[in-house]
Image (cartoon, rainbow, N blue to C red):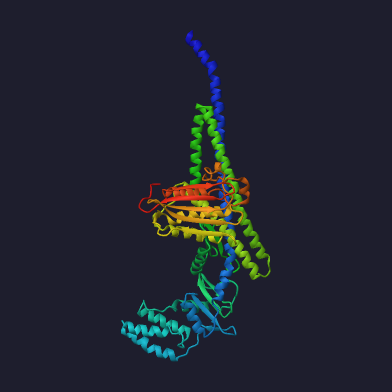
Length: 552
């Protein structure tokens, strides 16, 4: 009887507890689902923004290809005897084969005329070497010197025939024009070439392309492999970090991002590949795993105590707001320079004739916007590596003055006219144990902050002094707007910015000081700030000298 009554009480009183647990679990499950969707959506959006940025860079690279090949065509211009022109352009590696025309547009070299006298002079020496079976190196070199001398009158076909015979006698003999001469004669056998300016033309020979010189007096020949190598070298010069540009010949499959390479390379395409796409996916998976794990802990806390669960939820909401603010700020900071560069490029393309002064002015503005974009992306990458402890510091004894000079040189060109950037480094400072590049990055961020938050006449001072026997202290002073005392402990937090009004008026997303603190902490040092509103700010860094570096 008592047992049955107790069971009834449990049944009647247990279901509200079960409902309460269910009510607490449902919001927790919804939060986890929402976070998963938000992270997935943001990851996809981030990848799409990166792809759009790379597509814009690809179009910019494509616009440079025609000018690059126009310059290559101009490099083929020349004067003088056709044989000398052939020897020069083949000898310096400008072309793999060459057809030279005279002033009347007739083929001047390689010609098929027979002079007779030179052939008669060479034949006895070569025949004697062939009869000897193993001629001396001196005999081989004497014949090679005469064949490599293009002032010697000899028909191209005969010269190639003698070269082939000599090559059979000595495989290592130096005949630098043999392959080019063969390719040029093979083309003359396959077709009658005609100058076709302003484009690379595919010839009758398989995988051989022709480029007409600017003066239309020469046609340079290139194999497809050589063109790919030339395009690789050119694209390597303009490839930004994180992506590689690729040129592919006609009929070679490529990816969906490929676009036509331009009028000078008919049928060719250029595209890009992200150099480390797995890193982005791995980072997204790690972030998703982290959130789900923490969310599971949050569910347990909600079940155990609603108050703790509510606190955890507020914490996640705050992090979501931080991410939203970051995405909004990063989108604005990335979109602004890209939009500016697009407007400037469209302005240049709209002109039927380029004005050199306007073109230079626009290119300087494009370079400035590109540098601004590069600094922002570099800050993101540096912060990401520091946060994930994947930044590889290379500590070595380093001169404090060298670190300061490197940072000042990097920032000086951004100092406006009338600004004053002074350096005061005490003499005979001891070396510090530091990664010079990383520590220079920290000073660059401090100097960049000083420039951004000093709206009036900019006066900046960077000092270095001995701090006791074990450290060197650095200071960056400015006459900017200053920082309220209550904000000074928060400015080193990631994505934190003091004044939302300044957020709209200045660039950046609030990572610079976080990077400074992470770098200095890795050096076993400290960073502090002394400031007051309207009185400027002083950021002080203390770094151990070489031999006594603290463990970070």
